[in-house]
Amino acid sequence: MEAHVTLHPAVVLSRDVWPLHIAVVSGVRFLREALAEILKRDPLVSVVGLCTDLIEVVALHPILQPDVVLVDATIPEGPNALRRALDIAPDMRIVTFAVRETEDDIIAWAEAGVIGYIPSTAALADFVRLVMNIHSGEQVCSGRVAAGLLRRIALSASRGNGRYTTFPAPGLTERERLVAELLGIGLSNKEIARRLSISLATTKSHVHSLLGKLNVRRRKQVADYFRGCGQFPH
Image (cartoon, rainbow, N blue to C red; front, side, top):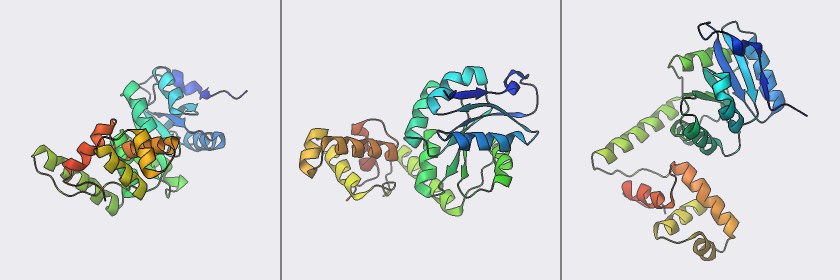
């Protein structure tokens, strides 16, 4: 039976030793093992553990004590799973890798709590340098992503000042927009399912996706989000 986590001898080293202690999280065995092999070639890096998911790395975090946790962006539930993990272990410093560098994706990961990301277009030769830079507080991103982050900051500032501006819903599908409107008038999942002629399971899936994209946890907050922006999705 495959062990779910691999501990390396470096885990017992003094925390005063220079190498950056890294744990790798991916549900794909060959990917996490291959990435660990690449990282271990660099003397500035020490791989302290390989985990299959965020549940394992949260449980082992006090033992592994990684400086950085590298998380595969293709993990199930993505940013929502990461948000739950950080609720339990808020001191984890997480960097996602293999991220699609789109405005919606980067903002979703940023709002979930990552300290940085490595895009899917990054070369293996640059991987360690990118991780080290992020750990030091530097992040390289595309101009489009930077513009999206600035717009999100501007929206937050306008809310804080009591001013509301029109801000588009982040990447919602047409069905999710309809679900948002029905949530806004207080309909239950069963009522939404009947109104849209879809199954209850499909309705729950749309609601779950909607909450994740808007970075909110309660149904009522969906309506609050759009009212705060001065609009409802149409």
